[in-house]
Image (cartoon, rainbow, N blue to C red):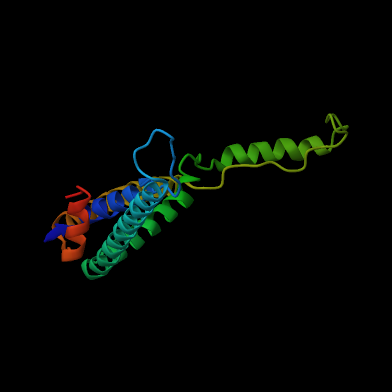
Length: 192
């Protein structure tokens, strides 16, 4: 049986979740009103426990077997390269985003602020801390640089969308084979 990478991933997750949710009980409640003997009750619970544990193991083996098959198919289909490209775009976007709202530098305003600060040095101290300010912080990026950052962010968004579309296409069209054991386990647990 063949399934798409997307379906295989969903089946892998469902099998893993089902294995986690199984409630294998290692104890038995005995009642004076029960018809079974103590020995029969214990043996029955022991058998049930072993069956649940075996099923949990089968589900996990199926889940992780599917993950291996998905990983192999991802390599062959170029998914890992696409994910690496997306990770790079995200990292670069994070760096650029810090500067997207920067104000372009205004040399004339900065020069006036600098002159005012310099002129204050010649006057008596009026600062709350008993000293003159000797530094000012001004915007240093040119209008061209600010616009370039904004354009790069738009380009990154477009490229990431293209890569995500390509990734979706691969996940919907690339198929892997389910082993007969996997089909049996998934069918037994009503997952397919």
